[in-house]
Amino acid sequence: MFDSLQEKLEITLKKFRGQNKITEENISEALREIRRALLEADVHIDVVKKFVESVKEKSIGSDVKGTLRPDQLIVKIVNDELVELMGNKRSELKIASGKPTIILVAGLQGSGKTTFCGKLAKSLRKKGRQPLLVACDVYRPAAIDQLKTLGEQVKIPVFTEEGSTDPIAIAKNALEYARKFGRDTIIVDTAGRLTVDEKMMDEVQNISKAIDPIETLFVCDAMIGQDAVTTAKAFHDKLELTGVVLTKLDGDTRGGAALSVLHVVGKPIKFVGVGETVDDLEPFHPERIASRILGMGDILTLVEKAESQIDKAEAAQLEEKIRKNEFTFDDFLSQLRAIQKMGSLKDLLGMIPGMDKQLRNVNIDDGAFKKVEAIIQSMTKKERTNPKIINGSRRMRIAKGSGTNVQDVNRLLKQFDDMGKMLKNISRGKKSRMLGGLGLGKFGIK
Image 1: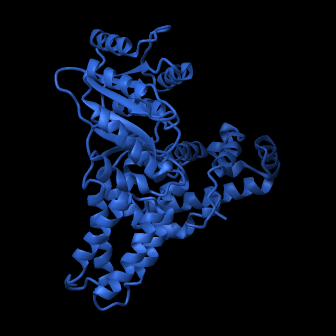
Image 2: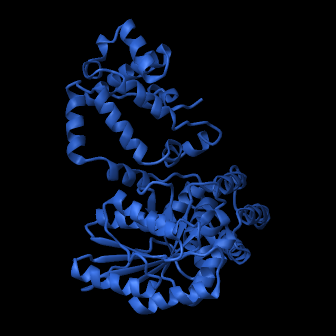
Image 3: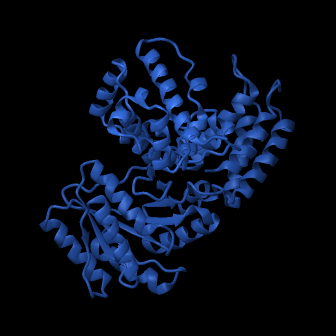
């Protein structure tokens, strides 16, 4: 995300290296480039003006103290301004006290609204909540079916009333159902339209009045830039939004919506969608997004993703196996699948400080994981436990069974053996040059 903006800011801020101090002359030149980069990223013009003026005001005359260099100071100022622009800190989802928490979700068709409802429900259930999904889009049968499918996928009940054309009645009845069956969180999926129209706005406003939600979230597609912010403003004027959700932030988004929402709409971004699966939802952390934009990585999000996919008991067992040199292909496959659930490999590596620059023009093929899985699954249980028995004829059988060639099988066996040695060294407390020994080719890096 924000690749183009990040690259342009990086080039601009790099010009301060070697400078003795920040002057009106060198900051003016840099700010012209920053202004251009922000406008190309489709950031709202008023936001750009405010941002540039604030950076200029804080930069000129700033003392460069101690070992701090001018380039480091300007990066800090730009980082702080980006964080402030996006809200300073994470805006938590409100939870009602003593009654069901009602969350009304609105948005245009195609924005990812229904999918977000499923993602949010799963996220809240992980935190101990008992969600109920409510299908109030009575105009598009596919929306109800989609919500039902998502409900089955995340194992959360979906309230529907077949044949009903009254979304207000459906919402009210869902509230009674939730109270009766102990569902403490109600997520209401409302109808979307291709464009904002009066009938649509009146309907969602009436639903809101009938159920009195504690949260009213507007879901918009980050790919459409300023148009997303304009649409959010139109909804807010009618609905009094409490927050915004940006979807498709993993795509080729220029970042303008994320940087403009708070200033234009006056409401924070609460969540971002970063993929198509039900796990691809992240709370919006302004400081982490600013760090990504400036190419400084996002270790905290990476750690949280890892913790969400790794079972502590399994991790302890795995550590014991590594210590005893009993790490098998079954263990390797289990870890591979956990990594896949965390998202695309390029995005994950990009969260490591400095890695995003190195990977900018590198092709990382997530499909390479499938080839590795196919090879491992073509092994017998005995072969997965003890790869040393895999001779020439076995390699040919595995290659044929996995739809690969013997060279692919040989490569995986060699990499598995190297990884086993590395893990053995780590378990013994020896220093190991891990990055050099990982063999990035196994991840499809060319």
